[in-house]
Length: 163
Image (cartoon, rainbow, N blue to C red):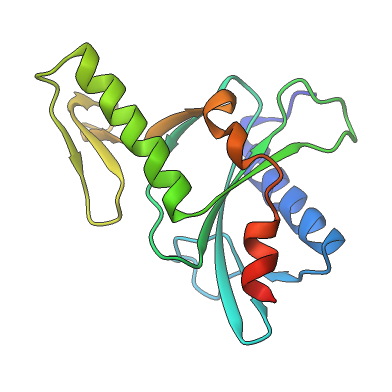
């Protein structure tokens, strides 16, 4: 199924909301448009913030940092899915994200020890020498399914916090 690039993010959010509903978890849109999260879950006096990234090709590109023990990154995989077919979900907490970022950094440094890489205040990897079309350094890491596989369908990370 090919989803237009403009709609992919919204379809990803909708898929996460539907999946959360199947787990009897209700999600809300944040009040602020400047919020770094896409959905908020409040249940049993707990609040969880969800950032959603959807893809339909080989990798999730430019995935930014993740801060806080109650913040999660939900990767939604539509690659090779037919219309109406449920996507695959990968649920990453801060520790999971940091492991992937560290692996990305180690791999890049082993290929080019002189490569300048930094971590900003949001734990986002900044590739100092790689300049984008906007004239700024490239930010984020690319995540492949194989690297995120240990986090596949791990909804219990969220349900355990919510009680």
